[in-house]
Length: 64
Image (cartoon, rainbow, N blue to C red; front, side):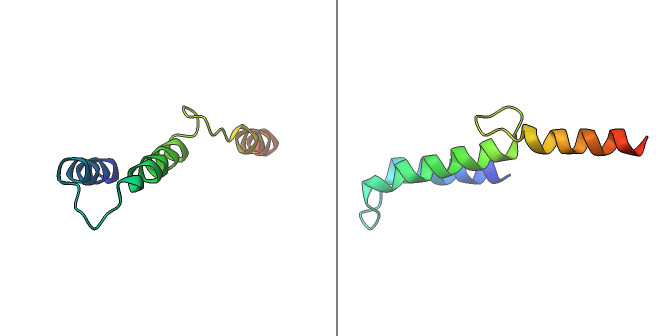
């Protein structure tokens, strides 16, 4: 749902480009969307959380 909303807002910004918004806002906006999606799916993106996974694996092994 968040991805759909952000895509819609980005499309409106590209096609209508209101004069009150500077054109340089789309780069940071795209970077923000990328980071949000990358953190949402940590095993598929560039930002990895393998150290946290190892802690959970060790904890599970200690419980059995």
